[in-house]
Image (cartoon, rainbow, N blue to C red; front, side, top):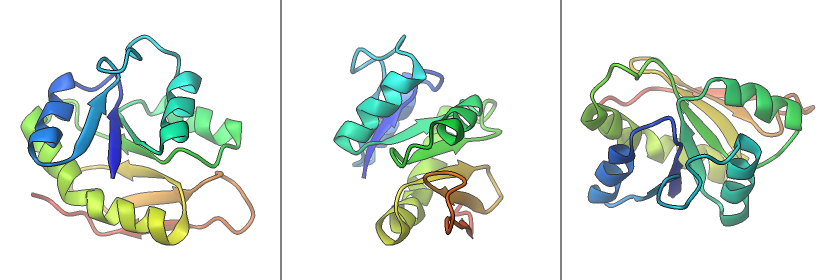
Length: 139
């Protein structure tokens, strides 16, 4: 699974995920550090990368756009978590994220430490789109 780490998360997160064998880039690596959300989403969609972000407002944009890609993983309540622990939590849960994408299609995921992952299929609000939850995996 290919990842793009958003500008609101430390560049070290992508470095740690890469060290763990993940294909992770940071927006700074790709010249997208100051790009607006629509451009970042379009870029991820075009090359099939999961956007990993801490931007909760992005969910409203995705919902209002009616887009069916890309998949987005929103990290919640992790701003005070050390980046090494954040990387471990993300890596431990990517298998579940990938399984939902492969089996059901692109989704908006919400990951909060100690809580089930919430997945809402894209486009948000579409008839027949259902929400799914999976058990959290802590490293």
